[in-house]
Length: 534
Image (cartoon, rainbow, N blue to C red; front, side, top):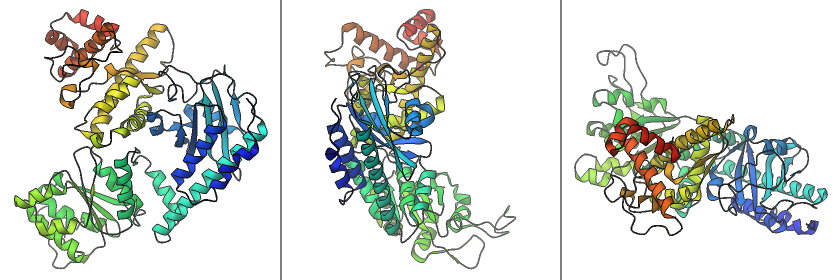
């Protein structure tokens, strides 16, 4: 290809002088690179400890944006970060590409990247990230001059550094002068507590959190079970002026009424049988910090007036004490109950609800942000892969489509459980295939539709796997089979789902599953192997 002129890089330089959000600044960078180079994907990755994290991407599949790329696990990324200049990989390079199967332009998860270049982004000699460009066509980047790539890397690095500095300054102003470096360290230490997704619902949630976190008001977080209320509270605390202090956690549903008062407010020595020494309660432990009252709707009615006093007066009275103690605590409360209905039923005090409900955040259920499901699936895939010690996890397009079509009554928690089981099955199959082929490594783990044990009968959505299952527990009949599937493919997918459902109902006992299905156990094992289940 002909090298673009250096003048065509001017939009990147100009964007550094324009007032933009960090996300817009990064997005415009990859857009410019995508226009200049004949590529199928451009990814800007930031360095976080020993991992590269996508900040903006063009041409990457939806689940790719939720992934993290440990440098030690990806030889090409390791080569880029170790280099002092841009790296262009040969089309026949034996090094695995981190984006194989993750390019949106690919027809399937088997499409491999053939052209790859990477620019290490450095500021004052310090690595801050990586810019990669990939193409499915071999030789797509042949002819690019080293001078052009050096200029591109310098501008991209400056853009990444500029965005990070602006974000740090904004955080410092919001937190009344706290050092941005401290904030970044706090966030890094709790990197697992992130909200994944870019849907309208999750963007609105982030906006509400940014607004509310700056205040010191009590916050009531509501939402369905498994929707991520605790994650929202941890992020609120992380964004607050008290982020350097601990977030003290209390599960109100797990507090026996007999000891709940002492647990919350503390007790003196001899206050009751067994109180051999004075003990500080959760409120005293959270003095100057934040207290998270999870399942607040389960708090015993007898304790609610004392909690109200803390909210009103900032005072607690330990059990057995004749004086009160002042505390400075910010309250976060969460519940999946309708507290207004609890008030009407006499199980929750109306005045306490008013004190807690200064700021309310409703966490949207997963069914209201289904566009986030691929990114969440990618995020969970990376986490589970590390725990299992498998190769890279890739989803077949039909598997991702099934995940998006499901209603998820158990929300994000249920999605993580389903994905965990699916990856476990897929990795088991990959290991068996590798052993049969006599290879040491199983390679990529490919999650197929049959690996997902979704109870389609409860989802309100029927898909090709449900064909002919009118009487199967948890599997709904398919009245509109997918025309792209052959009869054999539809039958195999149905059989795979049917067998997995029977095994799960039998608690993993294949002999019991064979009896329930009315087949010989040996025949069931042979069928399972032929379907890739075992």
